[in-house]
Structure formats: structure tokens, C-alpha cells
Length: 475
Image 1 (cartoon, rainbow, N blue to C red):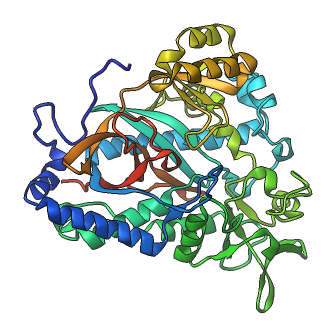
Image 2 (image 1 turned 120 degrees about the vertical axis):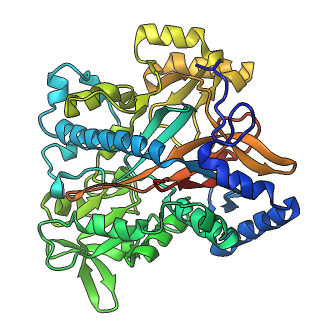
């Protein structure tokens, strides 16, 4: 897989622009580079003024950082997006059905499709959720599906984010910034809107209101607080939805409901969009030392007094070992073959797979089963001998903690560099809303770009940046 030529999303091999980029290329070629550099600085100033920053855990300075933004959009044709959307919807339906099953009859285990140890030994599986029916049978209210591209019609799912997927605020701000800095581009290119996401999010969450709700649902966003790396997003989404932003100490159980403190006393909450991990959600049920959650909230949830989005225990579905079974999971619950392919994956918990991985570490990408943010992984082709030796020891000590994948030839999209356009690797995180009313996929999503030449790591915490993602309307 790593020997294929890189797929340039903007240009054909002869340098001419692909159809989706034709109008943008004409505009770019007619622009003065000095003006574009000034506009890039203007975009950066807009991000700084808005306060679009993130924290890096483990950073000794603990400074907030500005996420780099590149002014060259990533453009996806309507035909391509229609095909992607069908695959994303199929996958999200399967994920939700899988979660309902493993917390009820576990038919997929009984059928021998999924080994029981994948559930029994899974840190993200919550026994407390067994037999619990969330309102509307929705577990994954907000999902982020990470995609990579390797060819004209070849997309792979890199991972599923079904706990608390982040990044949607950057998708929205990227578009706002491009509209402000380059308004002329949106008159010459028919780009589908993303600005309705906050309204759609509020409507989707409201449609998942619990049985105890009376009248118009009250929605709130639960944040761990200002020191969390995604606090900007929590406050941004609460503001955009017209919902309250709350912390654990703002909430308490009152008369069998979870209520938030207001100037007029405590008001019941119907739907809580939580950005707090399972372990910290309720000190009476999970981690007793948690200061971030709400004592008793899980009992209220189990009794139908509140909707928690995403539901507790959803993390088991974005575990990277479970990911390796997704083709079988999709087939089991939908009766169809997966429309979006997985990256081939070796489960290091299996003896033969581990032997192969240890023999080929220099060529593979190795990831922690519960890892995220680009941490705890090895990219063999760019790793030093010292790093490979250290990772080999980790693998041999706890093989079940890791999976391995081939190094894909990720597609590139140009960035605006000092000397003009320069290709860089990208991925894409589309955002999906799920409610009893259906599944809604925002056209585009968050494109993350590896700003370092040759780098495959797109995470902002690892030096990556973002781009505006355009999905063109049908011609």
C-alpha cells in the first residue's frame, strides 16, 4: 500500500486542475502572492481575535496555542460526497445497533462474529449500561468518522469517534473565516453550507428528549472547565445553540431530575451534551474521586429522567480493536457489505499477527487500542531505531494494547507555502447527528493537514493544521 503514487486531490499528474478545483485554480493563478500572504495573516488574526485555541496536555509551558489555518480549501465534488455519505450513514447505523446489542442480548457474540473477550476485557465497556435503554435507543448522538483517501475513488475509514468527537467548532470557524477573507470565492463556487450545524445539533438533541421531558426540551452542554483542551469548542457550541454551558458543580439532583442552578433556583435539564469522559460523569457510579461530574446522574439517566449525549459506554465502539471487526459488524447488523473500507489491521493480541508486526515494525503504523490525538503511536517508516526498539518492548510486554496497520499513501492537498502551493497529507472528519428522526451528515467536515513536509500526522497537538472543506453542489 505504501508503494502507490500519491494521489493529488487538486491536480492531475500532468499538473492541470481536476474538475472540482478548476474554478479555484483559475482564481488562484490570477491572484498576487503578496495579497494572498496578507489575506493569510488576516485569517490568522481572525482566529486569534476569536480565541480559537487549544491546550496540549503534558506541555510544560501549558500555553494555549493557535491552530494553524491554511487558506487553500479542500474541495470535494458532489458525486464523491454522495457516495461517501451513503457509506458514513451505513456505518453509523451499524455502530448504534452494535451498542444496543452488546448492552442487551449480545447476539453478535452468540453468533461467534465477535470474540467475547473483545467486550469482556474492554476498558470502555460499562457493565452498568447492561439493560439500559437510552431515549429513542440512540447511543451515538454525535459521531465523527475519520477518513483518509488514497485514490480517485478510494477512501478508507481510519477510526470511529463515538465518545465525544471534537473539532466541529473549527469546521464552522474555518468557513466563517474564508467567507470573510475571500467572499468572491463563494460567488464563483457553489459550496454547500455548514452554518446550519448548531441549529441542527440543537434540533437533533431535542428530538432525543427523555420520557420525563414536559414541553420544549432544555439542552445544556457539560464541560470539564476552562482548563480542558477543547473548552473553546464547548463554550462555542453552547453559545451557537442557545444552550447553557454548565460544569458539574452547577448541577444537582432535585426531585428525581438533574437540574442546573439559575438565578431563579434550579431548573431541570432534559438533554445533557456532555464533554466529560465516562469515568468522571458520576462519582457515585464511576470514579469516586471525580470533581467534574454530577453525583446521582447515572441513576436519573437509567430511570429515563435525562438524556446523556453521547450515552455512557459508547467508547467501546471506537476502540481500535473493535474497529478491526467493523466490516463484520456492518454486515451483521445491516445485511450489507461495508460501503467504506477499513484500513487492513493486525490485532497484536493474536499470536500470528504479533509475530508479523514485530518482524515488520519499520514499515507499519502501530497504535494504542485506546489512544487518541496522535499520541502513543509508532510510524515505522519515519521512526528512529531507538524508537522502534522501545516500541518493540512495549508490544512484547502488552500486545493486547496495540493494533498495527500498513502505512497508507495518503492523498495530498496543496497548502499555501512561502513559494506557492506545496502538497501536504490530509484526513477528513465528517460530523454526523443521530436522532429518532434520522441521520444527518454535515456536508464536508474538518480537514486536518500535516503541515510538515512528508509528515503523516495531522493532529493539531502534533503540529498539524486545518483547512476549510468544500462540498460542491450538484451541477
